[in-house]
Image (cartoon, rainbow, N blue to C red; front, side, top):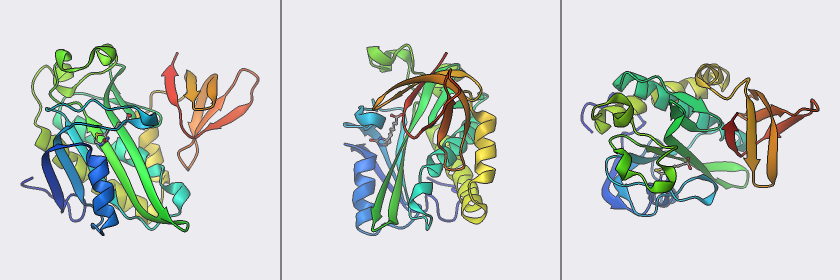
Length: 252
Ligand code: BTN
């Protein structure tokens, strides 16, 4: 990637035409001591991994990448990095297209209500200390509608579909890395507060009636905010407030 302006983030790039999953290789590299900011990119993934054990469709023309981080932060703060990455992606999309995306908690980026990006954050820890955090990012860039499998044709979109013309994947990656580095530096210095404010300015789910499907059941209520740890707060019809750590959200 020529012309990269960052110092750490994306300085080392492991690029591949095809991989099972960039996430898998990133874990391996992290285990063998890869530096903070190492980025794994593939043009195509044959076994892309989504959240909640789903598969992630990753044919050519998208951006499939995993970023290795080694932050010295308490373990429970690791999920904040997902929200940070979402902000950096929104900023990169705004920089490289005329689109203004929104974020659906915790980590889907939407354009006109359709999903353009997914983020999967995985952490490896040793005795309460973070060994590495791998942020996996999938961005649909130049797919046409036919490129998506039938079951997501209604709910997925790509940057090119929304913009009406092809978008340079390199520009999106460069811009993402630049924004990520700025936000990450701020985060390590000043904590999550400034990131949270930015995240909230892009969030669509806050203040809305939502349905949250968690691994243990379904909850209905109003999304009233996120905590400093990035946990979603949902107020049900009885006024009870629930903390949601992981779920799929539908906005009613
Ligand atoms: C989601 O389910 O919304 C998260 C999808 C994350 C997909 C990305 S693509 C790059 C990285 N490698 C993977 O196998 N998954 C993540």
